Image (spheres, helix red, strand yellow):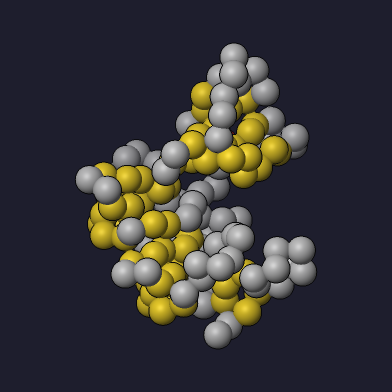
Amino acid sequence: MRQSGILVDLNEDGGYIELRQDDSYKYYNFRFEEQKEADVHENRTLFLSKQDGKYGFVDKDGNVVVDYQYDDATEQNSFGFAGIKKDGVWGSIDRTGAVVQEPTYNLDDYLQIDFIGRWHYGKDINMNYYRLD
């Protein structure tokens, strides 16, 4: 089976490939059988969801935790945070869906959007640092 998209993660330990396809994330095992995000990331509390052109977050049962109000968003990371974009600027939420950083950062030139609380990933992803503007 053939898939296309932007490779986000090739996780040998977890046995999956994560692709960004159009405006959503998809997971596949190494036989390219689609997997559910909740099965691949059993420890996550929030799962990115899109409805009517807006992003929000649901729990593992599909119940809405964060309303569909964001222009873009990232999946919850291993630290329990997710990036949220509204009106052209980024902020973050925690593992419960509470806003930790109101959207204030313009990160248009950044290759990767990732947050730990109020700290966002640096512009040069080869440097591996988080910064607070």
